[in-house]
Length: 460
Image 1 (tube, one colour):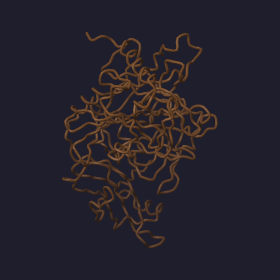
Image 2 (cartoon, helix red, strand yellow; image 1 turned 180 degrees about the vertical axis):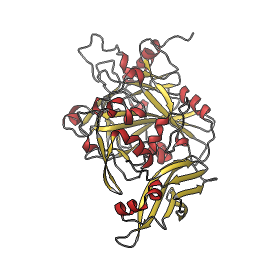
Image 3 (cartoon, helix red, strand yellow; image 1 turned 45 degrees about the horizontal axis):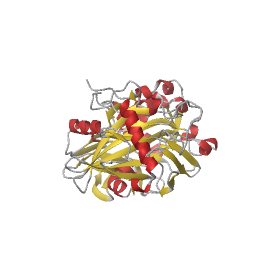
Image 4 (tube, helix red, strand yellow; image 1 turned 90 degrees about the vertical axis):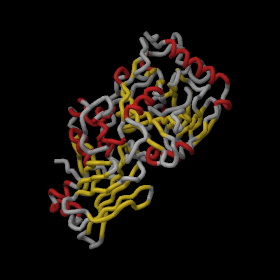
């Protein structure tokens, strides 16, 4: 039976968390952790500052009034007396996204998200497409696999059945837990969940700048598997189960766009754009908005997706990262790469373009745009609606979803740095300068924009 160690009941003006395992079976808690459940203490911090600390009551429920506090990622630590050393030891640590207030309603956020929703551009050889969060944890393929996932927990190593993974994530979101990928067969079930470009799902989330009137709309894509390409794939360095990518539209307080920030790969990992020898190591680039040179259709930016890794880039072309050289998007001409097997390298296949819901096309598919409600991050899901997807409750798990051998493990939103420290993430991004690129790159951007626009249905 999956333990319910830490459950989030409310996370708004009032934060309410529950410790069901401590209440229902204190003897088992002591047996497995060597920590006494009586006289437990808690500490809630935000941006490194203590917001509240105190004793855990006998009902093992902690309530904190957060009226007047800022929205963002808080950290709750629970401590208890250890019976092996006699000292106070940490029993639990979990990050919690709390939205105490919002300047915009869910309906207003949805309208903005739809107006600026990106167009995703894939390579001809791409095999994986964005999936719904529910497909990562309880798709039919997973449920039939009888697989288990390993987690080093406070009670020792756990082997969580995939059929119970959703429940585990919602009630055991320790910040240091890692979903151990080593138990997976990389040729097995997760690798076979490719997603269907005809039924792809993209999520959006809303965050406000803590220090100004700016706000951010993030667009998130999730994949069951990241296969990489080229030498990295051949050497099995980098492929991993679970993947998440995102881009951010930055808005001024009056609602006008300020910039577009695209992220791909790790910080401190040099990325080289082979068209112009542009090099950056911030992990993301920032493009002023509106952007007269980048590919777009009306208010919708065209975002090239790297084949295999799913990293996002400002323009189609070849990029070099360590052992990995990857193609982002579709290349019309022979300057970078051309598939000589194609009769016409300019023609795009149906799977290469994913359009927002508001842009119907006879040639390309539309993705489903769903809200990733950071303001409703609770352990128990509510009822499904156009403004709420119950599967997002799995994201209360604040540990590491992505286990990459030899590289950095990664969290899922809202606990990656691009959400936890979004102001620095945005403002320290590498500033992309179109004027430093050859004219042919700008011509290519224009050709992409015109090609996609030509294949849209005319409004009735």
